[in-house]
Picture (tube, rainbow, N blue to C red):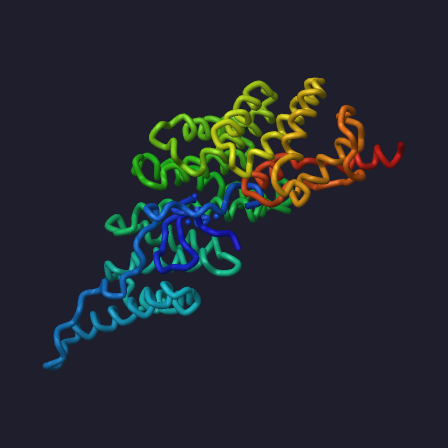
Amino acid sequence: MKKNPFSKANLLSILASMSFVGLVTTWTDTVVAQNRQPPQANRPGKPNPQQPPQTPAASRKMTDEEKRKERLRALFADAANAQNNGAYSLAMEQWQKLIKEFPNDPLTSSARYYLGLCYQEQSPPDYANAAGAFRKALEDKELKEQEEALVNLGWSLTQLGISSVEGASVGSDSDKNAKGSLVEASRVFASFLDKYPDSPSADRAIFYAAEAESRLGNTEKAVGLYNQLVQNKKLAKSPLIPEALFALGFSYEELKQPKLASENYDALISQHAKHPLVRDANVRLGEIALQMDKPEQAAARYEKVIASPDFKKAPLADYIYSRYACGDVPEFQVRAGCFAIDGPNAHEGQKISASRGSFQASACFEGCQGD
């Protein structure tokens, strides 16, 4: 299940994120860095069971209005308690009852927002209905959770677009709908950043907007957004900086600008030496070196990859070994047989690389067999 960077699975506190953001997930790993939890400060408060107005002491007969408020309070409290305890199906049932019985109450918009979070936390997540709930909540200009609802709408649309576009035939209705979701996600994030430029979720809004543009094939626009993130001094401590640097490197490769790609991979390696994406960055730098007919440089990069912790368990291990076995880097001693690999699939950033051009070694594998 993909987590929302803008919402939390264990809703002792419900977040708003990529939550993308709050993650996430849930603003939530395949193709986009989807599953990063936001800092605690990014998370909106959990539903407060005491939020509706309390009724007066039952020392006298309650008026119809007091009965209405008591019913509203009870439904809200039941839904909030269920959601905070992870009973999302029960919470959804209670939120839906509240919305049906009190469609015009000011509290109903908040109920729609929390219902949207429940849709995100389902297994599997229901991003389509989540997006619908957030849209409806945002129709209320007095919505208390405006900021959280907007960023979660962007996250849901991003995830909906990504999940729908995979396996869809180009030009099919599914493909068009997926791209429509990504286009809307990009617009939503732009609106969010315009309204809340100093939001704790600003870094995730920028990052996932870039991911949406990248998925739409707008690589240059994606590069501009990634650079907006990595070059913003106010966001220098964002946990998404390493992913953005890797995404920049990959995007520049797509744009046939190996020098800029190398600079961003090198920045990731030097500035975030312990980040899991360092290994992938060295792999990409090795690939760039080979493309530039510099096998010695490639060999040095692959040596760093092999020396990294738990390399043999890494998704890229077979690929690197296949490079050696095929003689792409003749200076190396072959340390394993010739293997084929489809692409990285462990870390978020590794999945970014897989989504944009998986490391295909099967052709090399076949070449080895023919020798």
